Image (cartoon, rainbow, N blue to C red; front, side, top):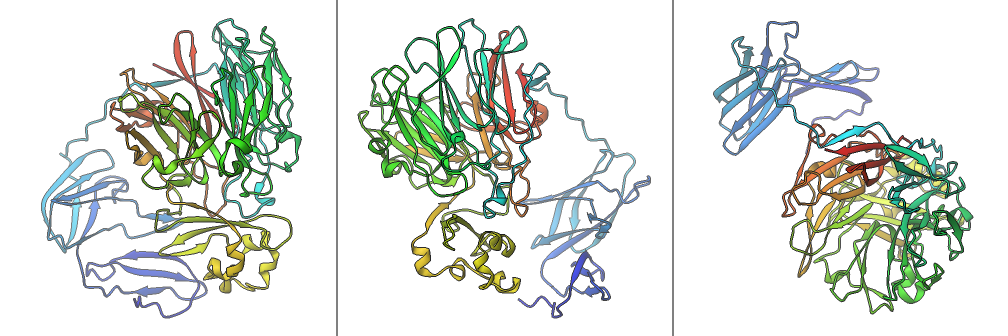
Length: 633
């Protein structure tokens, strides 16, 4: 299409307005070191309506007024906000494109003071000046609602420290920083006094702590010590040695400056001496950044074994690490049998989340796994001797995503267990579906010993490498000779970066969805339903199924956000914590912050339910911020 822009100029600003009053928007463009350009819109299609608002007040142009336009099968909403940037504005006359619409049945204006004025049967193709009617009724104020959750001030005295690591300095082509995952939360009664102990995970430079919740006080627990070299990614309280006292497994994660053989990546087991003191016990030696874990009696010998999901190898993202199956002899001594029990030697994916369920009703618990650029994976327990991937039996088609969390519960009241899967969300420039796959290519392309992750996404109908030329050259200096300037790189595709032979040898991970889902469990498998749109506004890293309003149905509390992303992606921080009420059939209604009481700013990494003084509380772990405690009313 010929848009009429035939000169090559540097332009730094634009404004639009119907300069010639012919019903279409013309352009004024500011050129660097040139006179401004005025471009007449010569289009002739479509009906229109132009509205000039006036009122007798200091706000003469009615800035902030809202306009609702409705007709059968047609509606539009506009707001009188002409400001478009620093010292910039468009026309204060509001322009509506009506398309084939011949008239407007209702045009409603909500003036800045809340007055409501309505015009009926408005004709097309006219400039309409509307003055505020002083007799217009005020919009009825919404009734103040009592929130379900109320903030409490008596939080554990644990102030997370600022980390200060820049993961992009180490691997410039990563999209997010995996160092920033803390704090993980877990609870259990370690000393048998009826009061819960709460584990708060640490990060490199700050050790984990345990606090006892006694009479609305948080008292440091003396029976546990940890060093500050670890980044705690997973914590599980369970009785691993059969003495009726809770022990503690802690999975080590993070990225930081860890190397593949770093002792700080070693997972840890602390056995309870029966009097509440946790002592570090021998544990299998493996090194990766742990993403998730499940305590599960795999072979039904009465002893809790462990599945440990491997998330990544620091410095070599996204090379696939090997997840683990660790069998317990009943005394808390674990043996690594991963090669025998897991498919493809445990290299299932970049695992971030897991759940254990008996999917086929054979009395043995199976595993559901999720991860980054990974299919939702269903591993079926084969008589306690191995796990096989039978995902195709439980989903009509693969759901591969940028998954960050999983939760389970009976959300539709039919007696079986459903799933909720938290994904990256839709609040970014990325689009993913079966026709537009997100792809992550990984190989040591320049043969320098490091892994080069190249992310590919769609712009329009074409797939392009996401890294800018500068980002690409930071990781792969050898590309400088191939793309000597920005113009040569601007239209490059993945096949321009690498040869066919190189691409045939690379690891390729994909994602076909960024939506978060409720997965309804049926006799035919799981049916995915997208969560409400506000649940798609941020990456979800924490999911808590809980009955918020005491109606007998499991609701959802979601937490997330991702602050540490590439600058081009931008901070994704639209989440304040989100509550979804369930009608008992698996249909979820989003609560506003005023209704829920959730107004948490920051990256929520964990949500822990607690019973304190006979009331249910939720403890929120927020990256590099103080914890927040809310009580369910």
